[in-house]
Image 1 (cartoon, rainbow, N blue to C red):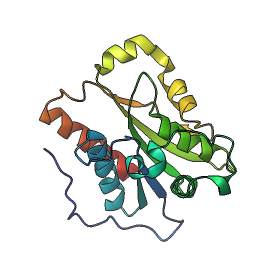
Image 2 (cartoon, one colour):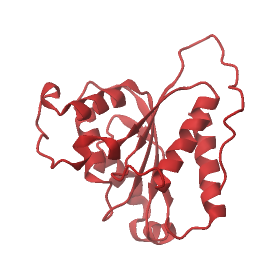
Image 3 (cartoon, rainbow, N blue to C red):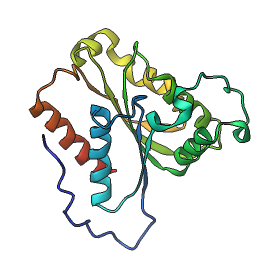
Image 4 (tube, rainbow, N blue to C red):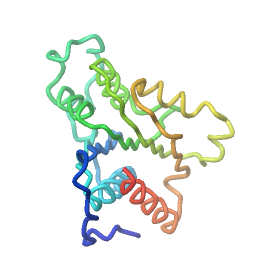
Length: 196
């Protein structure tokens, strides 16, 4: 399987302007690193790191609130569980997001929606997002069913009202794709990370 060349030196950055703050969110509730979502996130983060972006990663599956029953939709920020509060603060820190998650019953996982619902309640500023969705069904079949509704539905599900999100990238048949296709997607995410 393809892996990014982490030994490549960072490209020189100009003195003008602050570094872009990139948050890579693994929205898979299963924290095991062998999940393809984890590899996609690592590839994006490696690309962003290689050109000097300020990069953080957030793995929802490793947080306690991910397994808790939702019950704090109206909670004030100070009343949130600590790990959820910290995750929201990390989302608010970023000016660029890469969000990778599996599609479950045509929706993002509930903990991911919960995270962005709370982040959307904070004071807003302009952000961009790259959304990558893995699924068991073929991507072309999903697109033919949903047509052009994918972007608005995903953004609405994640409460991304303050985010300029690209058209989501759908990776279908994720448990059946060949090593070559997996390598292709890892290269694609690495290149996206470089662009920020």
